[in-house]
Amino acid sequence: MNDHTVHLDDIVRRLDDLPSLPVVVMELLTSIDQEDVDISVLAKKVSHDQALTAKTLRLANCSTYGLQVKVTTIQQAITFLGFQTTRNLITAAAITGCFAQGTCKGFDHKAFWRHSIATAVCARVLARRMRFNQDYAFTAGLLHDIGRLVLVTVDADAYARVIAKASEDDIELLAAERAVMGVDHVAASVILAEHWKFSDTIRLALAHHHDPATAGAGFLATIIHVANAIVHALDIVGDANEAVPPLSPVAWKAMGLSEEAYVHVFRETEVQFDEIAASLMA
Image (tube, rainbow, N blue to C red):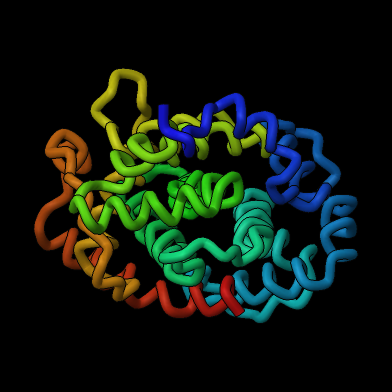
């Protein structure tokens, strides 16, 4: 038995050690399927958190969202972008700011978020082409590796050994996580998604983005899987040590996009990434 083994029960037990999302964000997440949400009340609540509001509005004003006017309040953002998109932006603004930069040797917090944001951007571009919900795609892309932050929070020393083992043995992070800690970031992501009350659609995508051909995985897992591979292949983050994960031929085929379409996806992802990353990481 490895002295660094972490059981799923350990993560569940230590959920209180993990960051909490602002109460208003939890309300936004739990109200995802409700029709009778009082938007003005939620907008007012978000406005009380000035840092979250500023970050959300910076994101809303990115050229990606195509606004002809500059929005200066959450209520305006909801009016021009719609409730679902604004909720998505508030959630993204909250999530990227709630994990403290830890002291895990070899773990680059900034590179982690840059990769996550790039995957979110690419997933949104792909979703638009597939006529799939772009907000779900962006959120799932942003969160696809969030379990890595959970494992770092639970045992930073063990995760430093994971990173070292992946590099030394030239193996995937998932395999290194299982070898060193006995649990991988996919399982940790799903636990956090449940704790943070994400929808079943998002949870399924997080659970299966490494194995999207699994029965019942859902199409969002395929989008995230392909977006993750594209971002690694384009090396948007510029991390020389990052290995390109194996690409599922089933997922690639399921997208049904032409070579020309992919060239456009690559270009759009690269163009949108800098502005959105600057907004979320400022």
